[in-house]
Length: 336
Length: 249
Image (cartoon, rainbow over all chains, first blue to last red; front, side):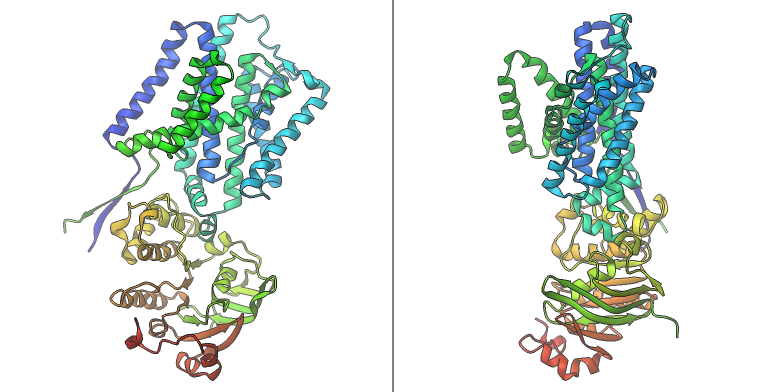
């Protein structure tokens, strides 16, 4: 009767190769790209890292915890304003200001969670948007934050342009890698197991001992802090924030686009989605508003033909998992 | 005589005008199985929701091992040893069968990684589901979904297990296996509360029987006596009491 049972949590050989390629891609981005592309391209690549962070954090909430927020631009704004204010007015070093801005985002998310968590489903989505609008309106009322006209970053003044762009580029790449790996670690932990259960059936999860509200709050705070990093990065890259630009609901639209295109509920999906979204943005920049039409068409086509996103297509034909989460039980009859 | 594991006192719950529990009192000891019967709408599933904490009672007290748990959340009660299966299975469809059970072992059971994995596999083996460990739970057929309900609850290491119509849909060949499993749990010292329409299966295991109707306890006590009680018979008029295996369809 007895069987040797072993639980594994890693992909097969193809997955190892895939993970290896991903590491190579990151190394190329870190060590080769900065010395071989124009400053303008380097600066626009920061947009890719921002998209990776936004997609990964939105997926963490929607794909793993079932919370569809359309108000995450609140934390882009707080991150963006936060980094400039903390660097210029408070005098923190830039890296410290980025981290501190993310912490502020986490704190604001924690406080507002008690408000928006009273709402479910579509009401939650609208509620988060309302919070974002309120944060934006409050920001325009504060003179120290530039009122309606926003803030410009002074910390980099006098710095060499090449050094500045390179610093922001490497910071962006580092933050994107950290956010993806942190998400992976979270999803492999006990919290991640509980979150996946909550996504599938919160009532059953609660009955099996999963602290539903606490788990959701952890995700909301962590995800919003991550979005704060993306906001800080955006502000460092553009050197300027205005209420209308940095609190734009367009950020949340691109988070949703990235996640839908790439594949919801996977770590790989948002990365794929971010790359596709970035390439489209780059290639179609000259089209003006027609660009939005193309985005819409792409979204519709992908949702119709590949409801689980582009990464869903990959896992359907291959067994590649760059970030393996699934448990595989292997049973072999014992020798005795 | 030690205190009962679960004591329910004057439990009350109404959804608007619909009373689903009106002054319900009963207790179950460790190592005892209590059967619950009653027509549809009697408040049987609501009773389980109140005991697990999925629903909040309007009044009354719940004591688990002498401790007042009336205001405890569902996860806290799970950790304290309350496990249940749902009448309509609620699998975590996107997770494998093993991961479904692992949730119970890690959270309700409160065990660390290695021990939780061992308990999860143990629960799968006890319920005959080990060969399905890597199957996505969303792909299970109904019968296996019901088994999964039981496996998940067992993985939490419950002291009290609440079973909601787990026999429905089983074939005559599978029924004895299930009955044996429930008897085994009871004999291992668990307190069992089992709601079931297939009365002949129920009567093979339970030590006492409770009949509910419209939120009231109609009768509780020795199963044979309860089944003969004129009030119970009256409650069942218009529906059928299944008297024995011969009548099983």
